[in-house]
Amino acid sequence: MLARRLLLKSTLLLPLTSPSRAAAAEVSDGSWLHVGRQRTLPWRLRLPEGDKPCPLVLYSHGLGGSREGGQAWGSAWANSGIAVLHLQHPGSDIDALRGGAKAMQAAASADQMIERLLDLRFAINELQRRATTGEAPWNRIRADAIGVAGHSFGALTTQAVAGQRYPGVDDLSDPRPKAFVALSPSLPIGVKLSPSEAFAGVVRPFFALTGSKDSSPIQRNQAAAQRAGVYDALPPGQRALLWLAGANHQTFGGGRASLPETDEKTAQRAPGSEDRHSRLIASATTAWWHWRLLGDEAARLRLASLEGLSDGDRLQLG
Image (cartoon, rainbow, N blue to C red; front, side, top):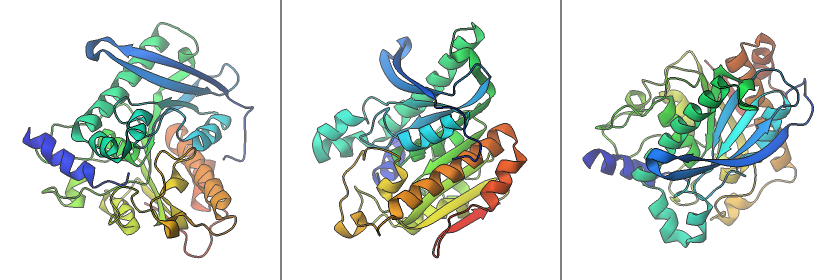
């Protein structure tokens, strides 16, 4: 109980393209039933055209989102040859958004975080099981090239799967994903661990993306600089940070906003900045996946020399 309260305390303070494009990806919707939990998990699969084996990224939406979340990033990744499985997490999805502010606060709980982690584990188990039996289209998925990505609450989910620690909580990580992308990540707040202690176990490739206006739609005092601190807290060697000047919280959602903007100044964008930010995010993360999931050295070089950065933007590797 104490462990869950500590995790809850931290959680409630949360804010809420590649040069070589393949043909357009096929999109299909479905759901799986986790019998042991009596929980139905909706998903959306973006599958690259053809019959070649491909990596897969599992995407976790933000608080109040759905399997439609992250569609811009999912499309970019799938069109570059990487399958994407967008998960929808009951209990912290769009139904909570419809319930208003109180329901949203209740959904940002330790219990819901744990449910999300169990969703991810179940999804990996299920797609691997179906691939082993030769079931299409899952038989195209490379079990040795799985990534996890998420936005906001989904970024927090990604951090825990990657190995972030919480005091008094058993290890929440999963050893099977090979690399991670956290859009609008967060440092732990209100727990008895320093940031470096909390992230000491994140030893696989981890890419954090945020921007100068990336504050929290729920906790107004959540500073954008705090998100960038995730990069500093990660062990050096396999980390990356993309910081975009003027980018706000919904910039990193990649689709329909899961939460409304709460600050008029935050909501305002310079003309054309949204398109520029989206292009940079799609290009940088696509290169990251090709580098980290497929060992593509040319993709590493594309990321290291990312085109389109402006004054105030920064990219850090290592």
